[in-house]
Length: 207
Length: 402
Image 1: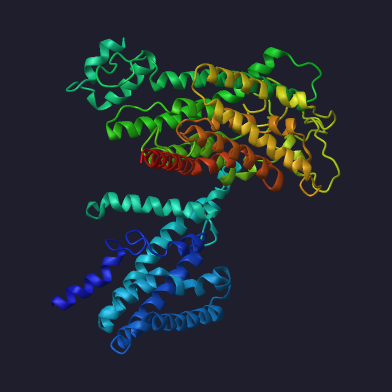
Image 2: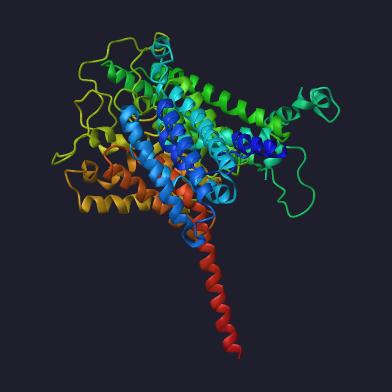
């Protein structure tokens, strides 16, 4: 029973209380880069979930055989292999989005969340909790990605998933899409707002 | 009247929750009754509200001339032969009034709400910001854009950092930068700097065919590859002379066209001892030096490099930024040496952006914001070098004594 509760915490904590983006402040660079539109943001989130979950499992299986002094290299090789698989899958089945995301799928390797989870969790836990931890952190990352992309696409382009949401009559009345939302600084400010709201709700993580 | 309602706002009164709103009005209308009674405070009626009001007074010449110029440019655009002074002023007044109202209502609304929420006194910093915002925007900026940008910069540039006196960047300039990057179509180009519509029946008429509406710097930026630059008036016939640029009868953002009125404002600020002459002088020096360098190696590739020094200093927002933006005591350098460095770099960077980036015809705004970010670093370096110099002096003394 105790095992069950722990697994639950491992899976659900990263959603809010231990969110990799707004609490641990990891993976900010990719948030800036891929959140201009919702669709690539969701694909990116799913890729990160997949890579994170499976690399966690693999490293967890190998954890007793990896020599400590070369563990970073081993982790990188595992992540790199998975990223290449994800990239090829995207190129095969979602070509347009893969082109939009371009180099950022490859850069999942450098995403701090991955190395952080591998080092902090997979190296010390058995495969099943590691898998849950990977999926949980991936979802925590994706939630933030989607919130930021929602506001940036809505205010920056007037669309959601590429469909026009802001009615034409608004434009006729003089409304103009906010060009700053397309630029990276606005992603930082939105993440800042999310952190602000998150911390004012969860008083216990305020420093 | 205020005294009569005062008990309601004091501790225990019915309207205590709104006491900061009341305080704000009372100290705005009368000098504060409670001066500090102990310690090293200087006993003086110069609280920061008085300072702010002097700055606003210094901005009045620019505002009045901006009104006149808005009307003047409109009358030129419709090709009218005679330009009645009263109609020009009234037209400009009607054009700017809604912007002033919007910027004050939004900005002060947020300030009041935050002060109430934090249970603090209302901070008066927005008094100046509110008048600066309409002055540095093009005449055609839609009102809702001013409202959005004002709200953005008051919240994220001022209140987040702790309110008046704690902001790193100049609030009015961030408002303009927000507009510039968020709505480039409404903040630059040929259409926005001259109001072509009639307001309340004033200035009826159709725009003449040769009308362009481009600002001088906008025109210059488009002339890449030419052997010499020419600047014409908005209807595209008469060349613009340096004296036109100095007196300010050129299209541009509302209050920044007339270098003369800006200098009057500068005189008021310096006389009242509010602005730092070190910053103003060194901004102009930096601009002049950089213009000379640009002149010396001018190429047709960067047409603005062929402008003379006087033109560079009179055109665009340069003078306005030097007098009213760079001298903002909150965001500028504190040390005297630092002020020279800070000002000089603002001037030089403004001209560099203007000349060597054809995408941005004007660089004063970006230069001031950039140096705002560096001001604390400059101060730190100045203080450290001073500390080191004194340490060295001490060592020499000690060795002398031995």
